[in-house]
Length: 128
Image (cartoon, rainbow, N blue to C red; front, side, top):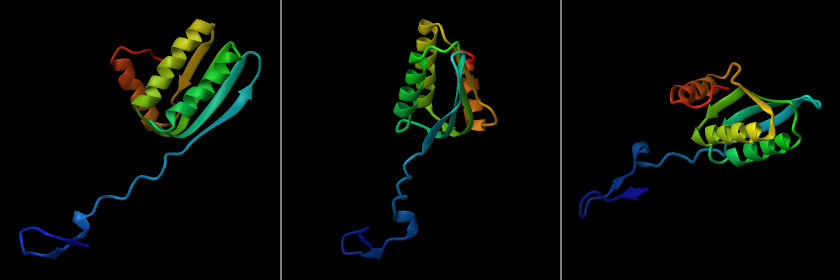
């Protein structure tokens, strides 16, 4: 690749001049670990960001429609929990309260989920 710094000057682009490679699409996996009339446990793994949050929202909404006594969301395998993911969890909390479902969000061993949920709590948000 050739770049031009000053009129008439030609130099070859270095690695520092190149744009970074685009990020690979984020991966999100959800799996129902336990399902009964009383409780549903959903394991979530991967990254929860703007691209994957709609899938998580749809998954949780579907389980809330079943109206179990408890819906537990296990985030132990989540590597990233961004603001879009927090918004999904907040909406799920509101929907669960309206449906009479007890929502439990467990960060498990995920440092990313634990950190994001602590910040949410520090800002006055719900403590899951």
